Length: 218
Image (cartoon, rainbow, N blue to C red; front, side):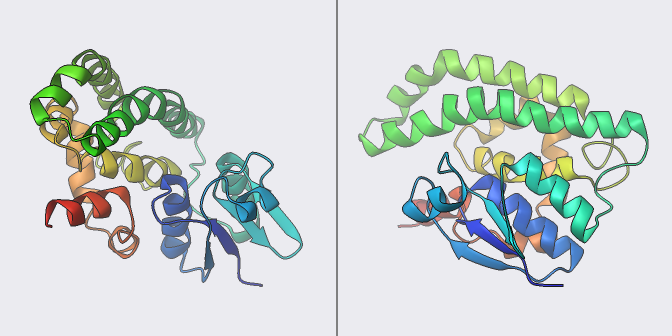
């Protein structure tokens, strides 16, 4: 079987998801580093987002389609057979896309990054993020109530773990880490367990968490 190529970049959470899945499968892959909204990104995705997956004569974009393609062509054990767990996996991934990204990542992480670039003090940033942080806390609490076991959806590893981890790892790299951990204790325990996995360690370089850690050590 020909080697798949991911079009993406290490700081892209969804690119990291697919990289970790291929590593979990023991499937060789190539990473063609491409920034979002670059000429190369638009070549494979009309909206300029990453990742895209190239395999044989196909170019697949949108992570839900890439997930389906991997399940069908390469085969994984990450999609549960039983309906209840499969529904929970889909709900977790949807919650990530619709709530965590929209209200937590774009509500806290992105503004904080901008405020830090502007040279605002930590006290100023805390005040500016106060309302958004309360809303984010309620979302994390709701996600925490969905966690069903050592893995997000029970006793077995699923796509939900690989989708959720990169975004949460970036969030836990923020000064708000303790706040998020308090609001979602089960979610944080899962994160601490999952971060030790080999595919997580091997895809750490170049992530938002890595970039923030490098800046703080300067």
